[in-house]
Image (cartoon, rainbow, N blue to C red; front, side, top):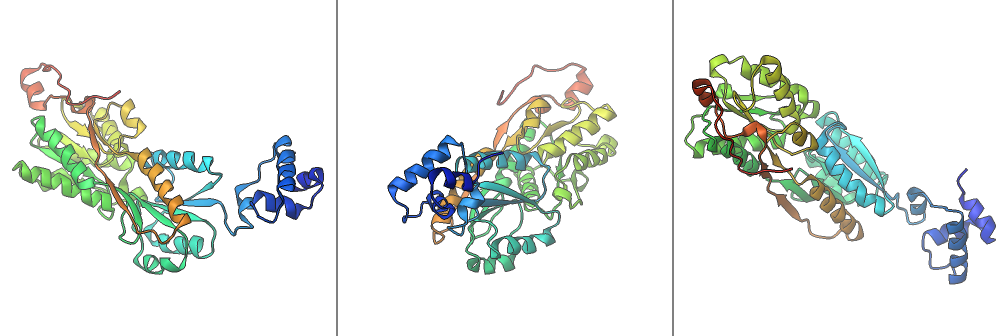
Length: 357
């Protein structure tokens, strides 16, 4: 059984109140007593729980991360970076998955007004206007990741430019019938990536065909799922001779579903249809997916560092940091077109614009 505060008090021959004050750095404890308590705590390998340490200072030593759901690789990679920082600082990370946008406001109010956490990271969700207006009274610092509000520190990705770069990459390979496999358009990233896709086609003077624009209507994870990618790719393949020769897929996890649908139907990638995703999660490397890399770990690290700064000084002016995704070229967009394969029956020499391990 691990040692308790009572065991430390008994060994150091002091009261439990004195032990508590030592662990909370209270100035009323003499240097001699403090050293004696810490000496026995160290010998007994005692580590006070972060929540217990925070009682005297009215802190919980807990950070809340609010995410749309628990099962996407995008959030996992951000949260791994967050957890690494918190572990060094003796803070607990509490996760709250929101299954529907309507639940966001009530959850925020419950956790901030009642003082259940010392700070909050808010990921990829739209900040409710009413809560943002009342936030000043909560005194709980909030930092946004992959979303934006003018009253809060925000770390976001330039989705419009990233989508434009992805689409231009497909155009540079000679594709003209380019589709977009998108998430639910209620999602801000989905809206912005559609905007970037359209602007790239317009700049290249390529007519946009409505049948080549597919988007999810799912509310689960805003449609950024393997299942939605699979289903929407089936719709593209049903177009027959009118199907695209290349598709910009708005997330890597959707692209994995799209590739499964292609494989089941006997459609080759990139010979028949080239693909490019968005995120560069670990899965993308394993399946050879060309994608737009988001700096997920860096965003998580900078966000929690900023949260600590705001916890020390809540009057800091909000900062807004944006990141431009970078193109990572892999096998799903090799320089080859379905026309070349169908007419010549041979595969041209591979040219790679950019490679990664």
